[in-house]
Structure formats: C-alpha cells, structure tokens
Image (cartoon, rainbow, N blue to C red; front, side, top):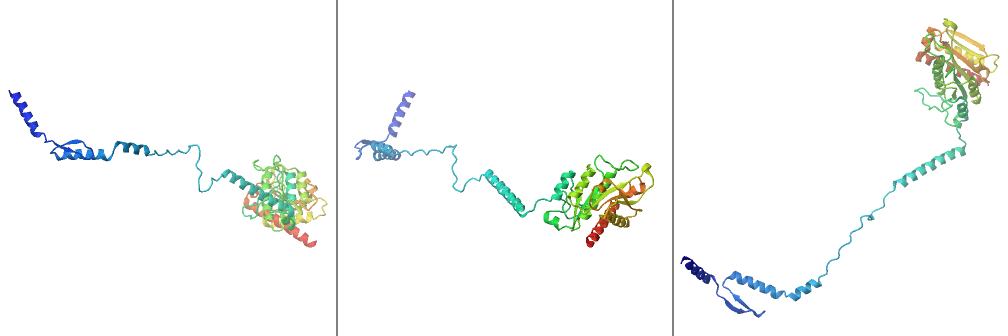
Length: 350
C-alpha cells in the first residue's frame, strides 16, 4: 500500500511540475513549437531557432567552398646560404698573399735602386771573410756603431771611401793552435790575445776616419798565410798583431816589447817605436824596447806591420795583470794611440 501511495504522489508531483503547453506557429519556419512557462527554456529554444534560421545549411556549405586555403610557404634549403645584403665576406688568404707580393716588390725595388746607384756590399769585407772564414768583429758595449762582417763601422762604399785608414788587427794563434801556456797550464795565449785584440779594434773603430778589419773574432784557427792575405786585400795602412811572450822553464822574464820586420823601409820600425813608447806610458810594466825579426806575419805583409808582445804568460806577475780586464783596457788604449800617432805623422809628411 505504501508503494502505491508513493507512486500516486510521484505522479501528482509530475503533473504539478509539468508546464502548460501553448501551441504557437513560428511565422518564419511554419513549425509548431511548444511554449513553456519556464523563461530559460523558451529563450534557449528561440536562440536555437534564430541560429538555424539565420544560418541555413546551403549558405554554410557555400562559405566553406568559397574560402581558399592559404598556400604553404616554401622553406629555404638548409644547404644554400642566404646572401647578405651588406657587403661581402673578406678572404684573408688572398689579402695575405697580396701583402707579401707588395713587400717583395718593394724589397726588389730598393735593391735595384742600390745597384743602379752603385752601392754594392763592401768588397774588403767579402774578401776578408772568404779568406779567413770569419773576419767580423764585435764592438764593446759602449760603442755606438754596429759591427759589419769584415768591417768595424762600415755601412756602404761611400763611407769606406771617406775613411783615411784601413787597419788590420790580428789576434795571434786560435783554434787548435793554443800558443804559449801559463805556469798553471790553464790559461792559453790564444785566449788572452783575442781579448786584447778585440779591445784594440773596438777603440780604433770609434774613430771616424778608421776602418778596422780583424783576422779572427773567435777561437778559430787561421793560418799565417790567410792573415797576411787579409791585410793585402784590405789594402791596409797598418797591421797590428797581438801576442804574449813566453820563457822556457818558466823563468822570471817579464815586460812589454814590440817587433818589426827585418830590413823594413815602409815605416814598420817607426810604427813599432810609436806603439812601444805610447803603450809603456799607459801601463805599469817594464819596457823591453823594439826588436827586429822575420816572423811570417811580418815577412809576408807589404804594409807597416808590428807584432806586440803584451807581457810574459810564463811570468806570474805579468800574468796576473794580463788577466785583469782593466789592465787589458789600458794596454788596448796605448796600442791604439800609438798606431794613430804613427799614421797621422806619416800622413802629414806625405
């Protein structure tokens, strides 16, 4: 019974909830549409009808068919590079080659002009270098001029021609020819002679009117024939050969002496006398005077030439002085001054 009562109640409630249906004819569509008292449902129905009426199926289809699909843009190929509007790429390889060509042409042009003007490299330098192997000389640290192979401060032919004197400085012995040895058997004549010879050349090279040529500038063997040939090719005005004296059995002989060629009539004796006296006045050492001999370096030369024995390597007192750089400087100054005094006097007489 309770179930029946519930069913009857539900039916009655449904009847109450149902809206009154009014039949109305839509003027546009001609269809009969139910109307309910519920405002929301009527509005929705009206909106649907309006949408249907305003957008017929035929027009919608037409609009879809008339609309053209946009064409897809073609993507540029990844391999192809897009040309830049602003300028081109610089090819540095070609630029470098062009620069090198310009430099090479400029260098050839300069050399050509020098050859046309008659400015070859110094002949004295080349001949002395080929005959002695290496006849270049290095300046002292205080010297302002740069050394040139075979010449001391010679840059070109004009400078060479403006010089008054060509002086060859010869460092005795060298290489496997050690010369004399001191009492300790650790110091060789060839080394001390080279040190003093470089100092003499350095001082002479500072003179504006002097060219200097060295027979060797390192511990290298140069034969006596080559040394004489260097002096001849240089057309030297004087040759100064630097040596150290020695006494057998390490005796007590000491002092400075200068040798010249036997029977010389070219001024060698006068050169020896000038060098001996001037040098002895610069250093504290016994003067042994000038002597004559036929040493090969003197005999084979044709210009005023002397051989200076700067002291005895076998004497302990002399050797102590000869190893002192300050003493070497004073020796070099005396030899240089004596040589220039002789040349100036000889030039004045002529």
